[in-house]
Image 1 (cartoon, rainbow over the protein chains, first blue to last red):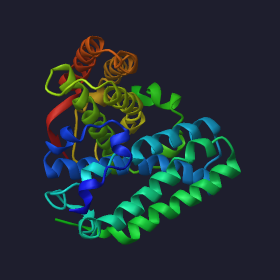
Image 2 (spheres, rainbow over the protein chains, first blue to last red):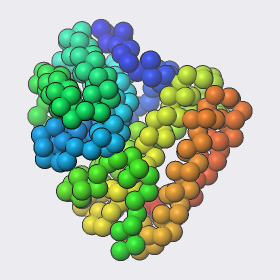
Image 3 (spheres, rainbow over the protein chains, first blue to last red):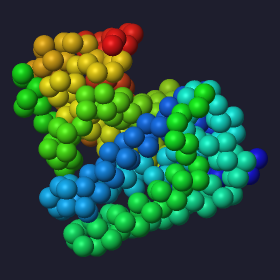
Image 4 (cartoon, one colour):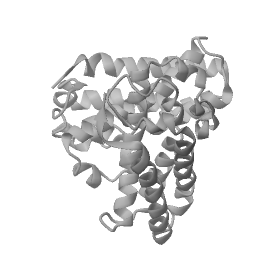
Length: 151
Length: 151
């Protein structure tokens, strides 16, 4: 299982993998979906600013960038062995069968997200970085997220 | 609707209420559930350390405390008018009919959670503060969270 070494930013986040390993697959699936939901809401707020659909607000941009950054590393260990099923999920089986490719795509996202907080202080810089993060999100979703949930 | 003034820590977090107001009730319900799930996972890690079920780890404690703190204010605006239904939810209707009481219980939680990051650096202090946060969580859940989800 190539994902055995999938530590990413999560270990750096200090979330003990031992604790996560005790969690049931369905709860790990729900956890990663929850993190993605929280991350998506805040990234959506940044994206709205970048697109001019919402007014640029420096404080709101900083806070949402911090939320996206904090969330970005959390799902990684919840994609571990045995979490490919157990609850409806849009995770493609390629997450597990093409683990190295998934890891690369995931880490690309984490790397771009890390630049968001610094970019949030300036509207033009934020807009550019939101674009880079969006591409990284899409890159991973195109290859590893199904359009419909499977059981 | 007493919750009209329910701004809590979320506005301080810079999440524009205008953006949230455009979100469908079912998505607001899913969002608050997602935040609670992420918060619960990290609080669970802290609680395990406090109970001696997991070894105390200063870095893991700090990171999980930061996650809990960041999450704590986010659900508030997602309990706004019109979000009492739209998807299965354990939120008691008293959230809306007894808005001031809910606000007080919610803010008690936020207040105790704010002390977690500083407490995380010392095992005994963390243990004591985890107890206080746990009581605040329970206080709100006892009164405002149903045991089973309703539609």
